[in-house]
Image (tube, rainbow, N blue to C red; front, top):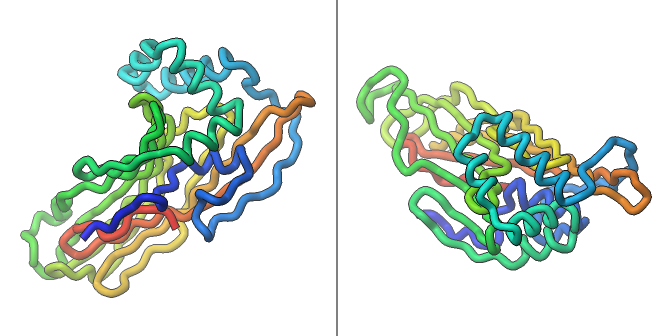
Length: 249
């Protein structure tokens, strides 16, 4: 049974807000924030520069529907989006005042036009060898994502995928797993992901990926304050493909 997730969905978008405000109250207990350091690297310091950077990255990603959605944002929405990246107080308020809802395989937290969510497919992926469920040594793949969006436009998304052998509802052997940054169009924000561990325990397959966010915030002295934040994105599944864990830790 899926457990309530309010208060534990800390997406990359929320992570960036924590970095910007140096607040760890909404972050996983295991996460660590490094003190900011000054840098002379140019950063988008005005609302128009921030919005131009986001649109350019959306165009480069080939997401034509998101580009169209971005172009249709109202003036108020554009101001809100730019303020999120330029004003730490706005980012903090957005992540603190959020409501949660479950929509099928998605669990989403919303605050105005901002959304943070997780996706876990409800159905099992077809076995790689084409054998039927319950066949010995059959294999399957499972995946889960975490994302951050504004007005339906996904700004950042990370994904954990894994393949494993199973028998009935029991996972038997981990075949491999991967960690992917599907998208990151947040201005002046670097997101990387790397393998942490993959294993079988208690009849379940588990893959963990370490996600690191490096965020720069313009300072009044014309430099950039860099902060780094990391957390582990974990995916666990039973042999039949049922996802039991898809969140941060």
